Amino acid sequence: MSGFSPGDLVSFSLGGQQKRGTYITERDGMAVLKLDSGYNIGIAPEGCTLLGQYESLLPAAKEVAQDPSLPRLSIVSTGGTIASRIDYRTGAVTSQFDAADILRAIPGLQDIAQYSTRKISTILSENMTPSLWCDLARAVYEEIRGGVRGVIVTHGTDTMGYTAAALSFMLETPVPVVFVGSQRSADRPSSDNQMNALCSARVGVSDVSGVFLVMHETTSDDRCAILSGTRVRKMHTSRRDAFRSIGAPPIGYVSYPGLEVTLSPGARKRSGGEPVLHDRLDERCALVQFYPGMPPEALGQFSSCKGLVIAGTGLGHVSSGMVPEIRDLIDGGTMVVMTSQCLNGRVCDRVYDTGRDLLKVGVIEGEDMLPETALVKLMWVLGNAGDEEESRALMQRNLRGEYSPRSMVWEAKSRA
Image 1 (cartoon, rainbow, N blue to C red):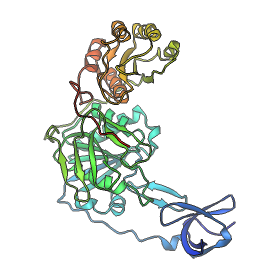
Image 2: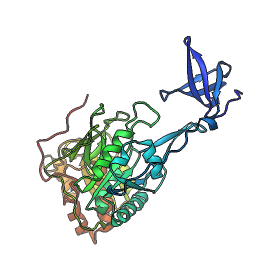
Image 3: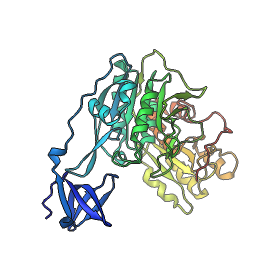
Image 4: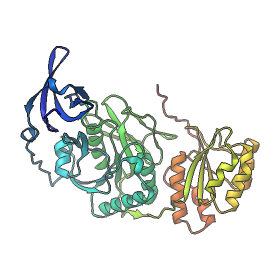
């Protein structure tokens, strides 16, 4: 055993140079150290020298005064990282929920607003569920009713688009509700959490209303994009500019470090009205992607669903052999919505025979909705509509900008 405790500062020699790191643990006979760069390294314990013990290295917590003359923002957390610190006793990066902790971690926030915080959950975003969407929508609704100028929702990036779409349907808001996350953890020099947080706060006090996602627009630290909650998709696993608006231009941008908000002419302005909550969802819905050779009987597993979204090929197609199975689902009470696997363009099942056959059996065209947005909308529609006729009408109505009334010339710029 090395004799070091988690959090101890140690020095070691590497490549003839003296370096230092923070001891985390011992694994496979090696001391695991976190370097100042944020990366970990394994060093033989006998090559390490103690420089300082963990408890003696803890910085004194500084009080950060909040200006009561600034507008009030609420930070509602689901587990995403708007501010974090390294706990060297575990080696983990832990999220901060207290307003004072957040202000200490992200200098500049206190110049934009005064903050309160509310924690809904502490989960990885792949563990998000529709029931948590409902909890979140209710919490955001209560915060808006409480008089805040805007709400920031911190969220893990992997499923943030789903949750943003869910709140877009469940909440009619007169103020901005801004989702924000971080692609890189706070302990890495390339972390995007500070810029994203500052830009989201600036949008939170701006003259706009709706549900948005604010993240890096480019790989540089030059601006964030303001993206509609029903139009956004994560397009890269790790890049800081992972999120893109699909089928519609961004609502606006926030420059950095100037934090100047520029809104598109069509952006809806904030109002003095009251929020409206529609928090019922029917979770008995599913999303399936068609693929060549997909056995028609595979759809049988969705017979207990009240709604099914199919991501078809091209204009919204599946193999002709699947049409009878889809007809059986619809006859059995399942509402089926067809979307496209293509990221741009809209579904049109009136061009080819298979498409016309799908329409005959009762498939609803999903226009140019993202498949995941269509899934969330279907859950919401089935949870709130009075009957099948109203459900079909709502699915074909543009409620929150989830589809375009007509195909647009604008297209998201291609990426390398």
